Length: 271
Length: 253
Ligand SMILES: Nc1ncnc2c1ncn2[C@@H]1O[C@H](COP(=O)(O)OP(=O)(O)OP(=O)(O)O)[C@@H](O)[C@H]1O
Ligand SMILES: [Mg+2]
Image (cartoon, rainbow over all chains, first blue to last red; front, side, top):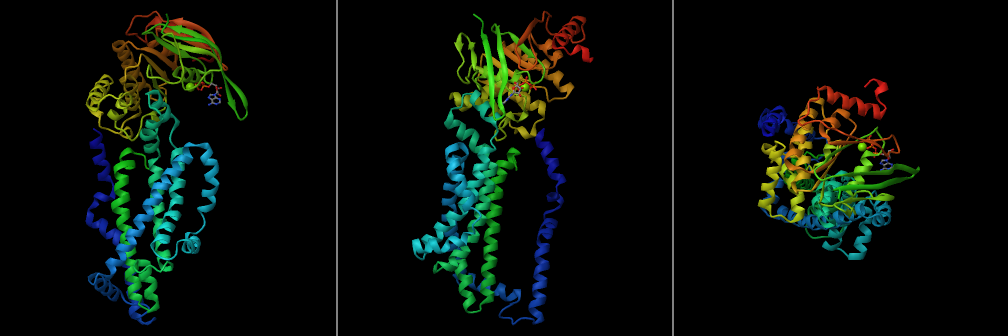
């Protein structure tokens, strides 16, 4: 019966008003910005070198993609992103859950996390570069460090938000500590953990592009953009920014939205 | 030997504002397969008493014995149903919720799902086995909670105002259903309520508690044939007697 109810829910949402209309609605703001850009670019207010029209950016994008340069930059950046973010997710979720479960750990770690979290990630960059030298290691380490904060914080909140009544019910049904953890605390905290991962990834993106500019890595989108400035290749900078936006969009759509659909949306636990 | 025995239970809550008495000197005993209702004014300690019997709280004085054994912590000899609909795990389907206790016991998947489905049939929800709790109404969720508490076959069922948050019509249905379930399963049931009609409808015996900090005021045995007719004169007489004991009759209830 609820399947019927769900089908009718969906029918009421704008999603069903036609995929074409929805796509048009989503594209609209970009079309407006694009049109303004074009108008400014062709009006000749700036030299075309500094303010290239979109067709030039598109041509550069296509050229750099064909030549394999852009894919190489993008791939290196993605590898660093995944490495750093995976570390952050692993340690962040673990630390957050431990803090949520143990009063001692909470007393020790919460002040550190509260102080460390609001500091802009790039402020740590010189330290990491001193410690690890230039290259991939400081980039990945900094990404992991900075993006761990929101993950720790949200995982901790999530464990705190696990309802007492779930724990009691599970205990009454014979769950020992290990099973309580796996079958109640982790799924109960998941809505917050997912939010933390999403914020952590956004953080990772921001810091990675920045550190790539500083760490003198030979390949990477941050480096591409930074290096292009030297030769006034504005079209290359813009092409790099477009790729960053596209990768971010893809991660959101294909990783996080999928993850949510399979878990918190299905369970009606969206926070 | 009584199945459940409460011996002189007292409890004091430690709060930041000081010690708050929860219960003082509660004693009663009940036989196997008996349906016992506990009624009392709000705040008298009914939930506290049930939590002590469930093993979630240890009393400062006294002990609970079940089948002669003193209670230490929760155990699979007792199933618990709370008032709060949120007691179900939102991340499990109705079937997954009901199968939880069996899973903790290590029962193989196929077997526990068959048993869980059987329990859902008992509460007339077998068609909703695959539904997640947020797609079920409050009454349906409470039925799943009852099935879940019964699934691993505890000898004792502890219920804390499980139907209090339901509308009157649904509550009537649920009481009938529970009476049926009890008739078929013959569990020993302790059922907390502050609704005297509910107590008279369900109970073999009613324990009446004093206001806060609660203790047992008196016990009333309901000698009515089942299924009970809530409109019969005898039913209403019992209701009046309980209301009088609770001191509410003067307020015109
Ligand atoms: N966790 C707690 N900490 C401190 N005091 C508590 C706690 N739980 C209950 N109490 C106190 O103990 C007394 C009994 O509470 P309890 O919840 O057992 O009452 P109740 O009979 O179930 O009430 P109701 O019918 O409203 O559910 C109350 O006075 C309450 O203030
Ligand atoms: Mg209560």
